[in-house]
Image (cartoon, rainbow, N blue to C red):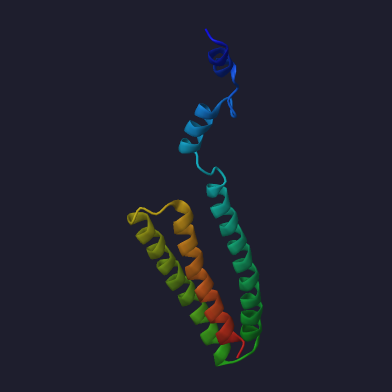
Length: 126
């Protein structure tokens, strides 16, 4: 064996376990990607909760006032909740049928409720 061949044989590679690292990257490109989707979803749910608290306060003021307006608001509140539930279930089912993941289905459900909450806030704050 020549000196050049021995030097090439003993030359350390830049990454000693590069073959293992490449295989691992193929299997798991970004392990935090799933957690990021759920963290974003939880932040959106918290924001929706804060917005819903404001709508509840506005609605309670409307219900506390005597008259036909408070009775119609009570009826409207119940029917809106049932309609929002049906719309959210339909959105989740459509996402599941299309092959979307659970995070995507939950995001669709949150969008439905967010639009309903914002519409109620606009209506009640007039």
